[in-house]
Image (cartoon, rainbow, N blue to C red):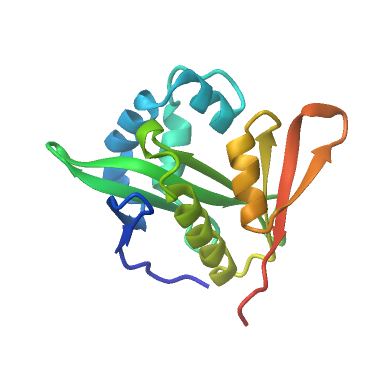
Length: 179
């Protein structure tokens, strides 16, 4: 199932507003800038490696999601150079074409944490994955990333250890597919 996603304004818990919309190719420069504004710890929590630079192949995959298989939401605010991206959430198909499991990732700018933005992004992502026919959403989370683990539990993801690796946990949620 594919379909367009209409941008929408969201008011966050702290009263700030963002526009939530699907990513477009023209967002590439803003994605790089958003990555550069992240702390080293945030980059590590998101990518599970110490990353100084966003590699071009990952950037291109991010701004060119495959319809019906991958999806990326961005949350934007007005800025002097047009917009700033202050949050993003994506899923990609896990495994082969028959696999109805998707893997997710979410990133929120440092000064937008604790505003409920990650919750809004993830809830929208879950709905979109369900719309695209996925049955399960999962992700790996660094065990010390207590904020992400709390969000996963809040959104009814199961949290389980990864056999042989005490530093990482798997979060997984069954999605009731729309038929």
